[in-house]
Length: 275
Ligand SMILES: NC(=O)c1ccc[n+]([C@@H]2O[C@H](COP(=O)([O-])OP(=O)(O)OC[C@H]3O[C@@H](n4cnc5c(N)ncnc54)[C@H](O)[C@@H]3O)[C@@H](O)[C@H]2O)c1
Image (cartoon, rainbow, N blue to C red; front, side, top):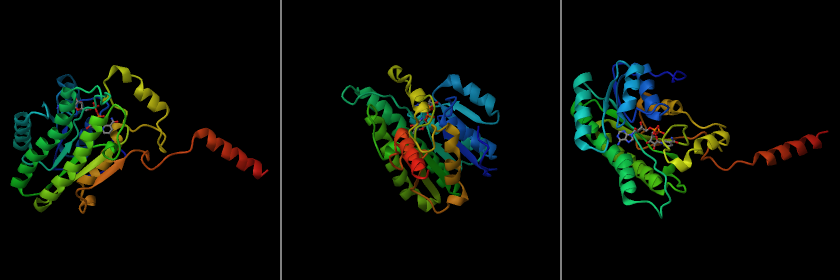
């Protein structure tokens, strides 16, 4: 899944949340750190998928954890520290994106979105940072946010607001944790071909985006495309970066593109001129 970029994280321990989903970003990041020699620990709320993660990564510590539940988070982080001796890296990735027009959105869905995408990131960051401070060796936290930190979208105002909160949380954590040698950064994916969209009325969305990705790099991202950015931020190559973010969106946010038929017309006229 991830082999094009090489980093060495031997002897380090990385926690990744939301690792269950088969084509998900979290699963790819967990594999990336394992391939780079790290001890890896992953969690997910979906028990069904954790068996498969364990088969893929037999040395990994994987556990059913709801990132919204403070006691479950504390217990998991303690178990990881007891098993591997230290925690060096946290990747906050577990997230949900239930789509709904804002005028129809119920309070429960709003709360579930913020509890997962914001409170879950806070609970893990706080708990892991406490361990890192006690260890006294610094560490790295990477929050997987979204291009939605910068922009919104129809039927996902609540999701985008939660991701913008994740971006702000990244900066606040960076300010308060720098004195302990803990760097906190974010990776902002564009559209990634995963199973995050579960709403029936959007069943065909990923297929239509696959046909028309609307990005200069003319395809949707795969989970593995996020791994290099996460590892770079956790590596010494990024030792002067904190409170920062990397946009990994295939150039989608760079600006608007010309329609393909207009480009074809331009090339045709150019060829005619040179005849
Ligand atoms: N797919 C995209 O286009 C995209 C774009 C930008 C950002 N992101 C972000 O990337 C992250 C990963 O998304 P993905 O696309 O891989 O989605 P995914 O649905 O494939 O994976 C998310 C995983 O998080 C788990 N999860 C959800 N709620 C949880 C909870 N309460 N406790 C523990 N685990 C929980 C799910 O079970 C799932 O395995 C999310 O934070 C998402 O917002 C995704």
